[in-house]
Length: 142
Image (cartoon, rainbow, N blue to C red):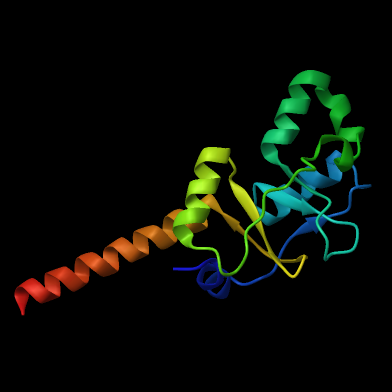
């Protein structure tokens, strides 16, 4: 299975935020969409960074409530790992696990094309295993 299969199933819509937005705006966006991370982009196409709930919590621990007035660009991760549509589910799962990343932007020709989460990867792997199980059971009972 390829990342393209996951994106096709869930859609390519991506929630984004501008680097100049406040952390307070970010928290509102995360809550509104019930998501754990947002891609940071100035133009909607090119990735400036990624920012997650964990980034907010870490900074909250350091700065207290004052973090809410900071800019997203001040707490985001600028060195963003990405994946492509042709990447395999297995290699992407490996990257996410060993890099301890829960969200990966999907990039096509240098432009943002979607986001996958570790939940998407796990769901698709479980679906694969269930299909294999059902196929084997059908074979045994035929």
